[in-house]
Length: 219
Image (tube, rainbow, N blue to C red; front, side, top):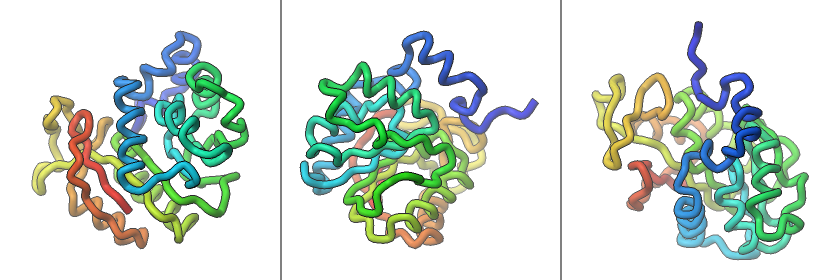
């Protein structure tokens, strides 16, 4: 049997997790800490309350429950492979769910970015590409750049490994073991820059220290 490229692709994964009340657990843990960190990173890169934000791979709105109260009404948009997961987050994690219109939560399993506005100021994909093989990450970058050629700032996280070590498992600074062929995935800096170049994105590596040794990039 072929192993899924991501645990989120296992049939029934979301249904079982939601039925068990595990909507927080399946987005990676450190719920409050990571949500606050994401918003702080965006603010450090210039996010203000009047900006329009796209949260890619938003899950159960770990960032959304911080960003929605901060942003002006209707300025937060989110995508995820499971709309049910986002709706659960809206229902139980937002201080005021009415501040987030339901149609701003868009199911998107293949980075097609449907039903989203033509103007956005900021985007973030935090802990998303860490769970995707390189060819899917490359596709996501290409489609993102094509969909919003004038997007102001987008932040990504990936796991990096030194050149020559990309084909074996490697323990990251915070202890997590990453892999070339299963999640959590890693890649080299050169490989990620090549993806950015192919998509027409100008990538800058940021110095921030992130949970589990992820590396922050700005495009």
